[in-house]
Each structure stands twice: as C-alpha cells, then as structure tokens.
Amino acid sequence: MANAVYNRIPDLVKSFITQDNNGFELATVSLIRLLNQKDPKVSSELKQMLTDYRAGKKDIQEARSLSSVENALLMLTNSRKGINDLIVSNQIRENIVEIIQSYDRVDELRRVGLDPISKVLISGPSGTGKSTAAEVIASELKLPLYRVNTAQLLSSYLGDTSKNIDAIIQFVRTNRVVLLIDEFDSIGVGRDENNDIGEMRRIVNTLLQTLDAWENRGILIATTNRIDDIDDALLRRFDFDIRFKLPDKLQRFEIWQRYIGKYVDTEKLKKIALIVDQTSPAEIEIISHRALRQAILKHDNVSSMLVRYLGTFLRKSGMSKAIVVRNLKDIDKTLTLQQIARLVDSSTSSVSRYLKE
Image 1 (spheres, rainbow, N blue to C red):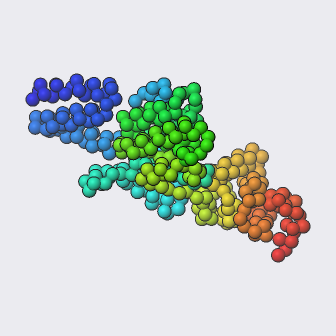
Image 2: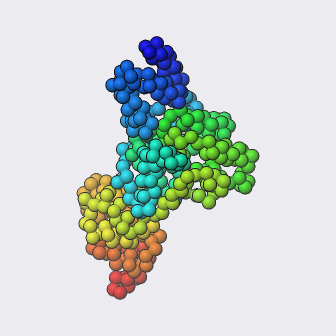
C-alpha cells in the first residue's frame, strides 16, 4: 500500500508543474482511495480539499503565472462586491442569483443531466452595471476574475487575433476563473459586415468553436452595448442573455441615496431622481462624487452644488420642462431665473411662466 501511495507522488508533482488540473485531480482522487483504509483522517482531509476546490469555494487567488501573451491579453481584477451592491430590477437580480446558484450547486444539476450556466451575455447601455455584475458573480463564487484586454486582442502587433483567442481559452481550460470580455461586439461582429471580412470571419469562427467546446470549468461573461451588431450564430451559443436598462425612478433614488444620501435631504433626492431620468448608475456616481468634492473645496451646500452639475442631464430629460423647472426651484430655493434657464436650456420668460403655472 505504501508503494502505491509513493508511486502517486511523481504524478502529483508533475501535474502541478505542468498546470494539468485534470491530472492533479486524478492523482489526488487516487491518493484519497489508497489512504481511505490506512489513514482515513488524512483521506477525509484530502477529500474535503478536493470538494472545496471543485466547488470553487477556495479563497480568491491569482491563477498560475501568465505567459507574455496571456499577460498582455488578461488582467486580474479583484472584487469584493456582493449581490447587495447591485441596484437592478428584480428580474436581473434573479438572473444573477440563478447563475451563482447553478455554479454553486453544479453537482446537483449534473446528477440529473444538466450543466451549470457557464456562458453569459450581458447587454445594455454604458454605465448600467454590466461589468459590475460580472464582478459580483466572481466575488460571490470566490473565483478570480480576468478581464480580456479587447484592444490588445485585436492589435495587429500581437499577431493573429484567432490565435490570441486560442491562448486565452487554453488559460481558462487549466484554471477555474470567471473570464470577462467587455465590448464583445468588437470581436463578435456579424459575418456579413464589410470591414476586414476575411479576418472577422476567422475570429467569429474561432469564437463559435470556443463556445461550442466550453468545458464548464469556469464562467465566460461577455458584455456589449450593441447586441444587434453581434453575429446571430454567436448569440445562440450563450446559455443566458441578460438585458440591462437605465434605472427607473425608484432605482435612481436608491443610487443617489447610496452615493450622496448622507448630505442631501431625502425629499430633494426624490425630486432629483424624478427629473434626471436618463442617467446610468455610473453617471450618478460621477456626479455625486464631483458635487461632494466641490462642496467641500468651496465650503458650499452639497445639494446646491449637485444641482449645478445636472444641466447636461436635465436637457435630455423626458419630463416636461415645467415639471423640471418647478422641481429645481423646490430643490434649491436660491436658484435665479437665469440659472434655471441655463440648466434646462430655456428662456427666462419661459422659466418664469413655468413657475407661475
């Protein structure tokens, strides 16, 4: 029995050195079986380690050292964001929870012949939380998140793009990770497009082969602002399709509350959430931080400073100008007719009329 255990040690070391995860798991399983009778305590410890590893419940840590090509194409992103950090619709939250649970309970699914969700497409306007959703999934599953540098991927000096995609997929096959490809439309463009059609066809064909052969070791998440530009055949390869939208009034209020609620009256924030209706979570975060910073530097009122940065968004508001003007005046009583007129891109006479209505 001792010789049989010793004979497994070279296999274990070799699989570790060559980053052969399948070989490493196989050698570990062999050791567990051999030690089960002679040393059940050690066998049980090894079994638990392997179970935790397969379930992706080990602490987040960087995978093996990257090669020069991988290093240029992949960037490790550490995230501690949880599901509660997302302010999204109930439907989107349920979708994200389903992805997490399907990976977390993979053994239960496979016992009935089902695979976990492992290829996810997230689409929607810029700044709506698509990449954040990927960070949440990786964090909740305690898996490392690697972002693909799409610009480098398409860069000619790195060589053929299809080969670069192969290099990335080879890395994923030997490491349990979440792989995030932002701006997926830039590499998954429809094959009927005219630009670089030969090269783009090769890239799309490589992506098709990659998605077809995906081995469910990790999760691939692709995001896009332009889902209509992606090749239809590629769209069909994804297990899950999540569509993000700009936040509604309640969600906008929650986001404003998160970033600036300590400094601005609740009723004022509700009015801001009403009239600033074409903003993304990312834009709300930027505006909030800028207003707070300027209020501190200029010893000014935060809500007054916030209003002064809303002009761009107020001009594209879907609300009537009369409603916008009256709410602005309620938010900041010190605003003059001229200031309100500039904010909403209207005349002072019109502003005066709106306030009297």
